[in-house]
Length: 576
Image (cartoon, rainbow, N blue to C red; front, side):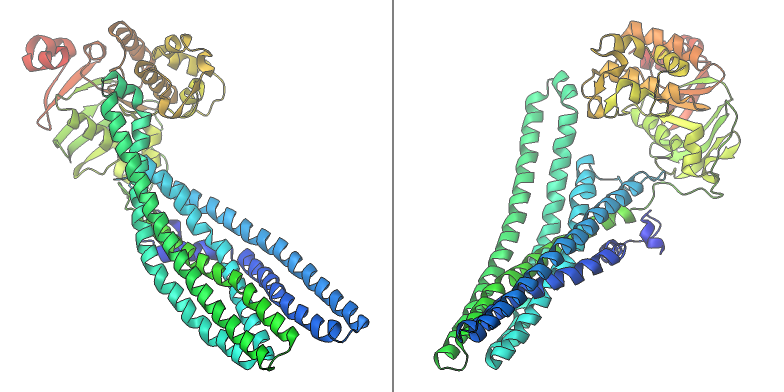
């Protein structure tokens, strides 16, 4: 079924998410249901067998009968113990594997080369969906057999009570459906509130995570107190959302507990009255009271299962939104899986329109080092995103080696054209792990060493306690801004793509280091097509030519020296 792919090509519903999660492990769920039903049936038989022991052995003084029925009781305990042990194991296996499968499915959608799933969502919110919501849906594989076993226990108890006394049996049979209906009605508001509160908590957590990851930058800007207040506000929002969701669940479970208690009190009252007028024996009374006490467990289980099912439906809706998110770019008309294979591919842009870009025409011959200057930073960002195929342009084409990128699969485009964004993140691991992330090399080979030298990352790691093996925390927050930029630049250079686009790669380094990077960058990328989106005079000075974007169009195309001499606006932008 196509919808199961969850790649944004088709609409995925919350119901489909739940059904596919259960269907994938229906064998284990079925086995768990049978075994847990056996456990609950065995539990229900315990008070019945105790009543039999009293009536047929204790009351009569028959030792033989006492031994026989005690052995039967022992066999029942052995059966229910075995059933629970292996039934719970099957249910937990289905739960844990479904959890892993859902997280993998969400991650696969997020990592789809066509993008789109992360649009409008903070990283913390996405993490909450991939972890907490996936767990809430997957745990259905545990609660379905558990709820089925509780229902089986109710049936066995009702049959046993019918044999003991027709009024008691009818009380169970006729009273349980309204009780279950009440549980369902009370659970509906919880489902609605659960989804809303989970979304608010996820957004607050995402904001808090983003503030923490950028705390070094905020301190540098003197914005620490404001960030602390924003973090505190986000934390209060998350706490409030969690408390509201918890109160809703507590109210639901409290209502269920009250209804169960009243129902069981009625059962005990009727059983006591029947014993007083001699309609049932002492053993029957013990069995009836024992069954009434036993029923507390199954009824509570059904109540808890109702709450879990409500939460799972709400979480499944949030997962379905991720899986159904439309791709940011198409799959490519021809769907080719490989781009140009030349060591250096020509890049061309014709009539490109997107955001502030208003019909850009640009040609970069193979092997050329081109500078692109955009006084409007949003224009440079829009061009970088279009080249990276993070978004689809409104109109126009981008060609690699004469082939339109819209004819290529996004992965094929990115294997030929690499765009290193200005805000490129580092990952948890070591400095070396980050540099070799795109190459797959586990050791610093000659290409890696050359890339680190060109980016002056070799100089940066000299100041680190363990050099290139120094651990890097999430998003590189343990490094300074300049160190992060140099490591990110080294990673892009180590990938050695035929076409490399660098967006402001040196804004956080000092002037001397920037000049060294400029000279080494030109030497390192000799014979490779390179585009620098920057206003840095040091980087522009080593380019073959520079184009200037203004009002979304190319307004100048010359060398850096010529533009510095003849174009006053250009000179003001790159030196101001």
